[in-house]
Every structure is written in C-alpha cells, then in structure tokens.
Image (cartoon, rainbow, N blue to C red):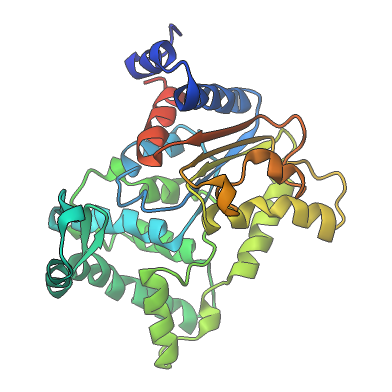
Length: 325
C-alpha cells in the first residue's frame, strides 16, 4: 500500500489486482506518472457524467491541476450548471426499467426529462438558464463579438447572475471550478444539446446570428493551437465513454502531422478509455488502443489502457487515487 495515499487508494491497490480492476489501478498510476513527469492531461466527458454528479470529485481534480484541458459534449457542459441551479427539483426514478410508455409520457407532461434513473426538471433547469444566457448572447452580438459555447457559460457563471438559484455546494460544480481557472474546453457538436437547440431556435426566428457562436472548425483550430503550445512534455488523453467527446479531440495529432505537415508534433503521451462498447461491432468507441497507432494518434510505446466497465463507478475511483483519497 502507498503510504501517502488515503483509504480509497489503499483499498484499490490491495484488492483491485486482476482484469478490469487491475487495469483501473494501472491506468491511475500511469496518469499520476504523466503528471509527475510534467505532462498535461486532457479528460473527455461523454454520456451523462454531469447529471451523474461527477462534479463532486471532478471539480477537485480541476482545482488541484490534475486536468489541464477538457473535451465534453454540449450536454455535459450545461448539465453541470443545471444541477447547480435546480438540484432539489431533480427526480430520481430507481425503477426506471419498469416504466410503461404511458408513465414516460406522464414524466414529459410534468416537464421531467429522464436520463436513466434521473429526471432533469425542464422549467427549473433549462428555462432558468435560458433567459440569462440569451441576454449574454444578445449583448455579445450587439458588440460585434463572438465566443465559444463554453466561454458564454463561463461568463454566465462568473457574472453572478445565477447565485440566487444555487442549490448545491459551489465546490461540487466542475464547470464553476473550470470557469475560475479559465480552463480550456472543447465542445464538439455543441448543437446537439439543449442550449444548442435553444440557440438554433433564436437563429431560426431571426433573433440571433449563427456567427455569434464560434463553430466546430474553430474549436479544432483552438485545440490545435493549444496542443502545439503545450505538448513539449507530453499531453495525455483520458477518455470517459466514447462518442464525439473523444473522437474529435484525439484527431488533432494526425491533423497536425499529416495535414499541417508538422512532422515533429508529438503523439498523445498516454491513453486510457473507460468503455463498455464492444470491439467486434466496428465501433470506433470500442476500438482497442492499438488501432489508434494506425491512425497516427498513439505511438508504439505510448502507455495504453482500456477499462471495460461502468464509467460512473471507475472514474471516481481513479480520480480519488489521483487526489490521494
């Protein structure tokens, strides 16, 4: 057992010795070694990790500089803030597997949008944010300025307009922790989110211009610029789930190497994915790390880990290890 570590870390070191459990410990130790060697780390968030309240521990990862850049879906970007302002209105449905279509419809009529066992309250969550974010979008457009989706969220959080609604401890919001540090975030496919849909509706009604929101291509350029400036000691890639949150940012390396012809650009220096996707179905999310070598993303000797398990269980344990808990 590691002396400077806490009870959770010592527990997993003692009992997590084989199979996915061992991969979890190996990945955590290699993540720590990356940071100790001066490398930076990207964490990618897919699924509904914010609704799953990952912020309770991920915010501390941000505060303690265990993550230097994030890629996440638009849902994860906004749902952490929704939880911050409407937590008491969320409804847990532990028997969600037993719901009939009529019972699902009844939840819709109550304004409760279900994510597995948790219902997000539309009025208190979406609409509570909408009026404030719309004002920021509108004011920005009037000034002839434009920003990324995460930058608008940062502005809203740091302005204090949401303080009257706070329903959880602010230290449990990873977005607030990121806003305080002005942490770089990449949000590919932001349009596929509630706030993205709302923004699109304003554009369709002629109340906002699409150009007021910076786009995915600009996000790729933003990420490429950050990667070039920060990769001297390596940048690791810690992927929670699959999908666009991971697929988009990992491509920055082959793009720089092949398309920008920057032959000295380093590969990702570490790779770990927590996944339940099955390799044999041809899904990129289920691809074993070695496949990424053929795409110019990882090197032969890059530390590579895949933990085939539930990210809601695995990610908090790895973060606890990194935080010496």
